[in-house]
Image (cartoon, rainbow, N blue to C red; front, side, top):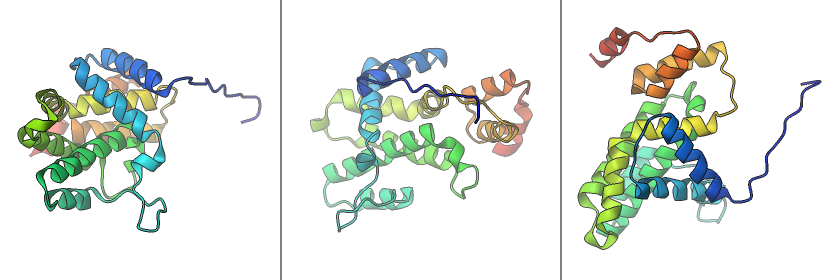
Length: 209
């Protein structure tokens, strides 16, 4: 836009940036998680900041689109070993959390919405917490259990990071209301109130039934 300028702040250390941003977002959203859970999510964000880690490659070595979540789930459940099954479920949980957290606005005109990613990711983490082999350690099972229990609040925190400098339009207000209806997101409700809209609890009750 003429007469405007955008300043891009350089980030010397991506992991430190995500650590500070996630810590601040969780505090702002009043979400308490264990240190090891916060550390796990920071590592996941740092990893997926590289598109080559997020998008799988085809057999020719070329980057491909993300597999549909249902395909990822099927491959995990049909894995030949228990360890491979856990790796598949972990990737399903991680990808679901990352996509729901950073690309929720992009779901507006898609058939698969954010609540699908939340359901798939939460269940993947919950299954891992219950079935993760002892070799992976008790701490990691506790991380998965907390991510399963607090999937929506964690998505809210990642939404805050991704939209920290974003101005909401009228279309975004409608989208925020839709997100609140589908997920019960506290962040969406807070943003709606700041925009002068008061979500009605009865609306979610009708949707639930």
